[in-house]
Amino acid sequence: MGMALVGTWFGFANPLLHFPMAILLLPAALILSALWAQSHAQAFKNGFLTALPGYAASLYWLAIPVHDHGGLPWVLALPCPVLVGALLAAYAGLFCMGVHLIKPQIFQPLAMLTLGLLWASLELVRNHFLTGFSWLPLAQAMAPWPTTLGLAAWVGGFGISGLIVCVSHSLLIGNSATRVAILPLIGLCLLPGLTSSPRNPEATASVSMIQGNIDQGLKWDVGMQADILKTYLDLSFKAVAENAPDLVVWPETAMPFYFQDPSDLTTNMRLGVARMQVPVLAGAPAYSIPMEPDAPSYVLHNRAYLLGANGEPLAAYDKEHLVPFGEYVPLGKWLPFITKLVPGQFEFRPGRNTEPLQSGPMAMGLLICYEAIFPELAQKQVELGANVLVNISNDAWFGHSSAPWQHLHLSVLRAVEQNRAIIRSTNSGVSAFIGPDGSLRGPTTLFSTRIAHDPAIPLLTEKTFYHEHFYLIHMAFPILTIAFLWVLWRAGRQTHT
Image (cartoon, rainbow, N blue to C red; front, side, top):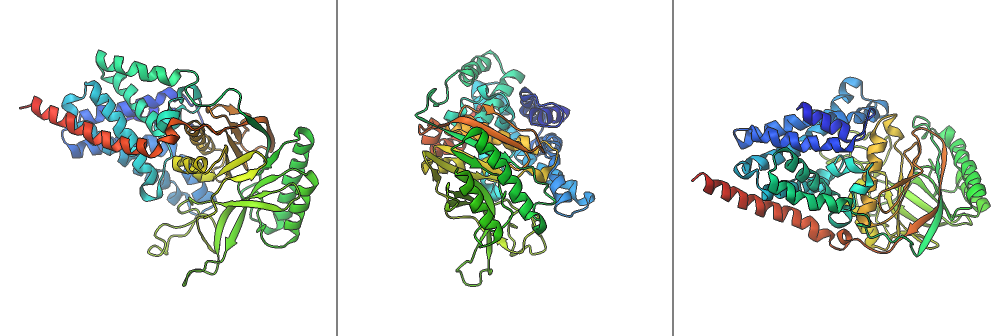
């Protein structure tokens, strides 16, 4: 348990020290705990209890928004990381059941590969089950070392997680055959140029991002709306004067008012953009009137507006994967006593206008906040023609914690998987320009007011092997896992007869 706690805490971003290679200790501890078990039920229990402390510790930041913005006392907020950690630990328990199933053949190279595929399959299930929660996949730990992520362009982040399990197995209990088998895979990860990104892209774009650093407690104060807008406009004027960008990007809900309504705020926004004569991409709340019978009067949307250089709106994107308990309550009709963390009178609905937003040569695939953790959403944007991805977010909810860094590291995986640069603009950090190889340019510090600029963001159209075979790869993980588990289980039974 201690080995798993150390590996999980130091393997993922944390306030003390992030050492990516420490993540190898987590699957190693789980494999050992499963081998000590005498039954499948005990293997599940051992895996669950082994993984739970590390996952709960790494998700400690969940208690911050629940207490500070959700209004729950600490006595109720503190168990939240444990509850979510228990969900992740349950998958670790299932992994240990798989280890126990093939225990007699555990030293074989095929067992090493099978356990890697099993872990990848479980992360894939976690990505979709109960609306999906793809936080803390093993591959996320390696984001600070992007040279280790090249294989994600071929097998995705889940595949990289499986490879980490293979390496952990080979180092822990592998024989010479397993270690020889793993060496080519490790070499592939470190091979320069493994991603599809050309050294000289056909086109580039100059982009400035504005990190306004608006206090979350003041963000929705009606009396602060004009001041917040002025903060962003003044920083944008400065960015345009200094950098002459092709586009200025503001974070999620940077306009804390309904831009679609006629008001002095809307007029000032349009006039400000017209004054700078540069298109602006900015987040704002929005609403629509549903047409279904018995529907609420209004539904809310988390929207990104693209305003032309004359200040007029050109296009918009509405967030399609909402945050459970933040923007809506799962099973809300049956659980009316559970309220949302985010205050609001109306229900949030996912958007339907999900096409990339076009500004000059830029076809921008939008990923609003939480959406960056889901590989299928980045896949969809690139399939629709995005030559660059834009992740706008507001991580001020989480205070001075490791959550913004963990969020950033998940975005790094999306960049490598899809061979697309990512413009990541946040309210309070971490904002950064992510290269298609996963490298970071100009990451900002937390809770600072900043202008970040990149004069040459690559606009890419070439697609990765992972993108071209996305569904086949994801189907292959569970199919191969089941097949190999059966082969090893049968071989183990024959050994004992």
